[in-house]
Image 1 (tube, helix red, strand yellow):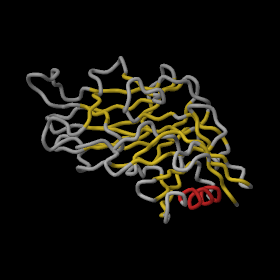
Image 2: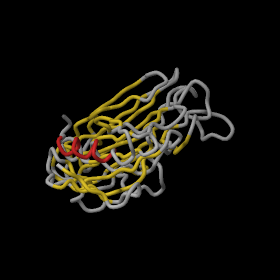
Image 3: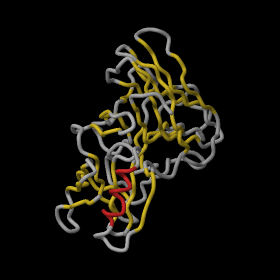
Image 4: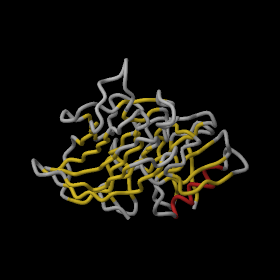
Length: 283
């Protein structure tokens, strides 16, 4: 197997001759972003990075992209969507090459042999074109987009999972804050139309503090009573946790609801980040 590239070190296109796979440059990503990584490999030179990872990706059906990290002399095999921003670049950036064959806004899943819409929310831009969730009009307050630590001690994350921003509920009370009532809800709900299939929802959550209440994922069909699909309450420690997948049976009349509830005191900040929705059941 051979590969070719267009220009030394300023690459926009990679093709595997005899391999049937073509990769096209999509954008720069953070070297520290390992959320979709299948493996990382070193090379002895910048020119050698393509030859290290392109054949490996071709031979791994989970792989649909490669990251070429010139500064670190490493390449990565990637499974999943195209990241939206470079995120944290303190350790350098890589160039993401996504498999060709799908229209803009989609990535190719080799295992399912389909193009998948990038239904993904990481709150790095406003508006966020790939995000399928918006603030509900039927709750008591809104989620807050934030970077770095939340204003209160002993609650909330210190940074986003990837990139700079995440969403959280602020549970402080007093001057400068909304009227505080324990049990108030902040809700995100989907606004796109779904196919009649089971979807897989994955995300990161942070629930740290002595008065953490509840985070819930629901589905609702039309005006029917919403069904709880996943629910978690209480202090989970000062760390981001990965919810690897929740199966959500949906159809054209269904919507997804992500709800956080205020606890009884200020140490009740709940945060979410990197929410992904895939059009098939979770493994």
